[in-house]
Image 1: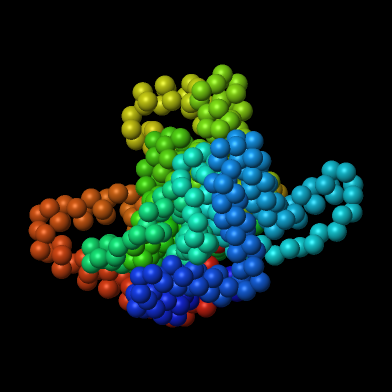
Image 2 (image 1 turned 30 degrees about the vertical axis):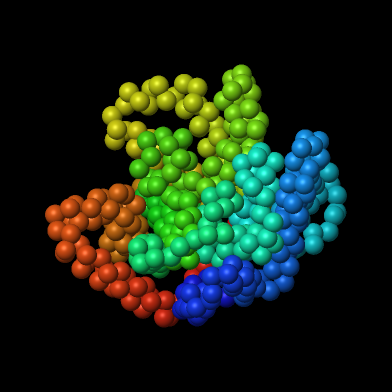
Length: 468
C-alpha cells in the first residue's frame, strides 16, 4: 500500500467507528460497505474497481444459482464460471509475470511482461468472495438477495486485505442481525490492543534484527548467526501476521461480528500436521473444504490421497506468491505431512513430548527459509550457512554482538509465542478477580501508549501478509 499500513489506526479507525456507531441500524451495512471501499481505495484507488467487480460478479452468480437450484447442470456450470472468473483475476494480477517469465525461459520466447501491479490482499478477498458461490453450490448457505449486504461481507475492512479468510456461512446471521454490547466491545478492544502490540512492539523490533542479518551475503554469516537470523524471522512473521489477525478479529467484535480464530500457538505444535492446524487456520480450512474434500480427501486409495495432498500443498504454496520458492515451500510441507500421515506419526507419538516439539519446530524454521528467499541462489546459500557448508565458521564477534544486544526482545518473543502469558493471566484471574479486573485495562492502556510511542517516528509499517 502507498500509505503506512498502521495509519488507519490513528486517522481512519476512530472516525469510521464513530460514524458506524452513530448510524441507525438499518443503514449500518451501507456505512460499513462505504468504509470498506474507502479503506481499500486509500491505498489502492484504482484496484477498488477490481474488488467491486469481482464481488458483484459472485453476487449475481449466487442469485443465478438460487434461481436454478433445481437444475444441477446449470448450477455446476455457474460454479465453474465463478471459479474460473475468480482464478482468472488472480492469474492476471498475481501470476501473469511469473507465467510469462517461465514461458520465456522454457520455450525461449520473448513475450513482453506487462508488469501489472499486485492489488493488496488480492488472494484474501478473492478467496473470500469465491467461497460464497462454492458454498451456494454445496447447499451450505442461503442466497443473499441484498447486494449491499453481500458487498459489505466481502469488503469488511478489518480483515479485507490480510485475513482471516471469513466464509459467508460464518457471518451469515451477523450480516443481517448483529449485536454490540459492553462485553463484545471490551473483548474486541482487548484483542485489538494485543494484536497492535504484537505487530509494533514485537514483530517490528525483532524484524529489524532479521533485516540486518538478511542483508549480508550468506557466505559472511556464521552458522550461529544464520540460525539466529532465521529464528528472528520465525518470530517476526508470527507476531506480524497473528498480530494483524488479532486486530481484525478484535475490530470484528467491536462491529458485532465473530470472525474465526486464525492462530493457536503454532510454534507449540508437535508435528507439521499439528502446525498447520494452528497456523493460518482459515486458509487451511478453505483448502480442506473446497479442494481436498472435493478431490476425495481421505476417502480414496492411498495413491489418490497422496495426489490430493500434493495438489492442496502446491496450491497453498502458490497462493502465497508467484515464485518457485513458495511452490517449494508448499510442497515441502506437503511431503512432510504425507510422510507423517502414512508412517511417521506412529514413531513420533512414541517420542517424549519435548522431542516432538523440537522435531516440528526445526522443520518449521527450515520452511521459513524457503518462504523468505525468492532468489533460489540466496536461498540455497543461506541453507549452506545454516548447516556449515559455506559459512564463516561457527560463531564470531559480530554474531555474539547480535545475540547480546537483542537477547531481551528475542526472549520476550519466545515467551509470548507460547501459552505461558495466557496461563499466568488465567491464574491471576483465578486467585484475584478484582486485581485482574484492575490490571487488564491498565496493561491495555500501557500497551496502546507504548505502541503509539514506537509509531511516532515510523513512517512505514507494512504487514508482511499485505503482499499476498
